[in-house]
Length: 80
Image (cartoon, rainbow, N blue to C red; front, side):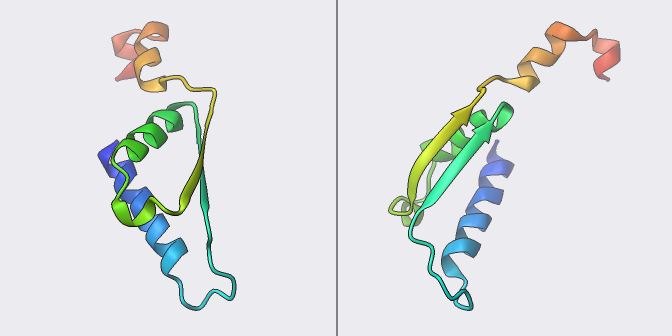
């Protein structure tokens, strides 16, 4: 989750800091699907202060933990 949060911060930095873009980004909407919901929530809980004014919407679509569900569906041998 921390690595995913770092990637999101890099994306936010790119979106908000690209001086070549003709239209400035005014707000950001973050969509998490499935395991991405965990990433989105984790990121929001640790959101860097400079991005708080821009993150306006967070959408959680089908929030489920694939990482936690996998052992329920497969044996350990199948996972590894």
